[in-house]
Every structure is written in C-alpha cells, then in structure tokens.
Length: 423
Image (cartoon, rainbow, N blue to C red; front, top):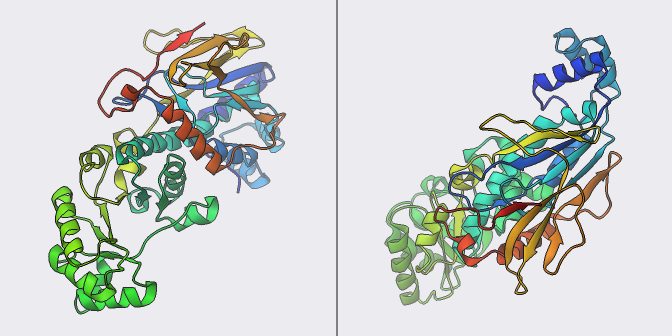
C-alpha cells in the first residue's frame, strides 16, 4: 500500500513551486534532530528507523492517487507528472535503532534533490517522533523494573495502527512481550495474555472460571485473582491449579500491599514457585516504587503507548545544506545549525559515555574511546545490506544504556545525561 499521502499538503505545494521556478533539482541535505529533550527526559531513544525505511520504499504515487491530487487542486499538471514517476533515489544515513540521542543529535540525514527529500518530512517525523517517544518511556520503565520482565498491554489505549508500532518500540526498549497479536505476526514480538475480568464474570463464580482456564491452558497459566476478593481469589486459584500454578495477576488496589500479602498467602498454601504479576496504570514511577515488593513481572499499557507524558520526541526535519552551501533558520526561538553534520560519542576507558561531539562536515580521525554514530541506511534509493534486526536493536540499546553515567538513569528531572559539543 502506498504511503504517499501520509504527508502534509504543503510539502506538495512546495514541490510544485520549486518545479515551477527551477529549484527542485538543487542538491539538498535535510537533518532530523531534537532541539531539546521532552520535559523530564535525560536521554532519547531512536526507534522506528526500520519502519521508516519500509515506508520510504512504499512512498510512490499510483495513477489513482495522482488523479485525486489533480482533481482536488492539490497539485498542478507538471507536479502531477513529476509525482507519477516519483521514487526516492537519494541517500539516508542515521543513528541505528536503539541508539541514544541528545539535543542536536543528527539522528537522520536525508540527501537528494529538494524535490526528492522535501516530501519525506512528515513521513519521517510521524514515524520517528511516535516510536522514539514510546521507546524512551519504555526504556525508563525497563530501568525501573531492574530485570523484572514487563508485558506491553496498551493496545486498547491508542489507535489500532499506533498500537502495533508501540508494541514494536516497547520490545526494542527491552519489554519482554506484548499482548498485540499483529505485532507478533508482523515483527516477531513474543505475545502473552490469558484472560480478563469478563471471563471470570461470564462464569458462575471464580472457581468455575479458573477451572475452565486451567483445563484449556494448563496449571502453568496466569489467573486473574482480583475480580472479587483477592485473598479468596488466590485461595481458589491454588485449589484449582495446585501449587504448580504459574502466576497470579493483580490489576487493582494498593499494588505494593497486595503483592506482599499475595506472596505470603501463596507461600502458606505451598505455591512458593507461583509468580506475581502486577498491572493497572503502571508507569516508570510506580514501577520504581514497587522495587522492594515481591513482584515477578509487570504489565504496562496506557503510559507506554502515550510516551508516559511525552507523546512526541520533539524531532524536527530541517534543511541544512543547499548545493554544498550551509543554510539555517535564524529565528530567535527556533535557531538551528547549518551544514551537514556527523556525530561521535566519546567514552571513558571504562566505557562510560562522557559527551556527544557533533562535527560540521566529516569526522576527523577518531580518538581513544570515540565511536561514530551515523550509519548508511539507504544508498541511491536502495536500503543497504545487513541492516540491524529488531533483536540487534534491542541489544544495541542495552549496551548504550549501560554506557550512561548512573545519574543519567535517574527518573528525576535534570540536564541531558551527557552534553553535546559542536566542533
């Protein structure tokens, strides 16, 4: 399916004007970056790159689309003719998925003619802003969980297509699984889920509901025990499934208190191996607050898919070079740095990141502990070979997060974890 109309009208009107005055073929460089991190964030996470590359490949204008644009007056005849043959043939470089970014990090560089590159603005920003916001929130939750697995279960709290992208971004950030089956089919994200309160209410009591679920899924299943009285629910769950019961899930109440009580009760009943899963409007702060409780796993939904209060990463797509000449916006509140840029992250001998260095033009010879951040993604309109897999990106983010100073992983407000220096 074409992605060509996932854009703003002004991109096509700019294209039409540039075709008319002869500037459409000028060689241009656009960069994606954030002027600042969202309030309360100390680092960003690049996510959505692979989705964007697929969307660029599908960014073509079929006859029906061109006809609609022409009939509705969005484009004139010359622009319609240009779009009929459009396919991006330029180059794209960027930070790999799972990389951390900071203010002014040039996380994506799009090179081509003005006509080729300008029409990709909204597509690039809509994908990267959404996925990066979700991944940053999810990464903070993973840090707060301190090794306990988290299930992404926010599909019912967002648009159906955003739910799939959110599941992918959360998994990239370190979540263990998702409830979203489309994300499992499309991206290979492990799926999880057993039953909701409606299944219990369907039956003539909890015992009957638990018996039906155990008969279908086995005693290793997870039983939801808070439809009525939690203490009685746990008692019935162990009676039905036996001490081999896989897990109980608690979705309401004072979760910290409930977890302690549930653990004590399960142990008394001999279900010492039964795990406790907590869910119910969890975010990074509530997960951190549960660190001392006997919890084995979490389920997080609304806060993940909404970026936990920061639903966009604040990324912009700006023209920085025309025919080799640096250009930049100079308004008082939205100034940017002109010229194509490359970036390096510097680390101590211990591996701890200390600063991000953004160079104008090419990077000089790398020093000890420095690594380049951009990688080729598209060359001549074709994606490069051996792009990272989703599991590669998970591993990359794990390593990048470990490299941050400890202060940078705090949930408290503060400056970006490492400074950005222009050289």
